[in-house]
Length: 275
Image (cartoon, rainbow, N blue to C red; front, top):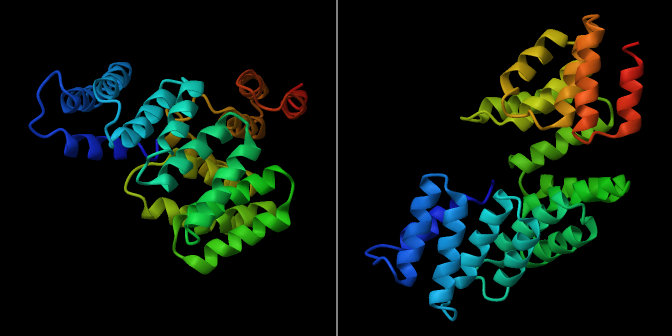
């Protein structure tokens, strides 16, 4: 998760020379549990820290990170409560709002997410990511004009910013200019030090729509282990298999996409092509 490192940095900095059953002791335990990927235990330790000292001014930070842990554990209602409570005394409300808005998008509560992005932009007019993500929400509402206004704002603030590049790629895709969109994703991928499956998935989409199936297959193979729960991965792979006249495998992929929540009507149209 994007803001997860905040937790380790803050907690480790706060917990130096901490003793076991103290405020900082519980924080230290939480950090250690995170290092061992024991997120439920880390969450419990943070909750105990705040119970130990309910009035501590650092609790805003702990609530933010508690929300991050709860979201990781799919306790989405609890995560929303933690993020909202963190806003009361957080030293970085923009960071909290980004986390809450992202959660709200996952929950399909787009109007509330829009309000959070509006607040971020009001507080920090140069926040490129907020413009990009608000633009996505405008597209979700079918308002391309407002979306493009936000995407142009990204360009005017910082043309080299990652979210500016993603904005450009998205506009190219909306215009069916898959060649230019692919170039943007390739540029982003080449600049990354670690594999980000989202960028490979988007580039694979460009390759599929340009009938460059071998390149699309290579990208999908690279990210197969990361995208097993993403319905669109199976749509793209199904399209590849359909092009290879493997209708049985293509149908299985389209049905898997449908099972994972892909639009039923669209999935059925692809399934129909395998008959």
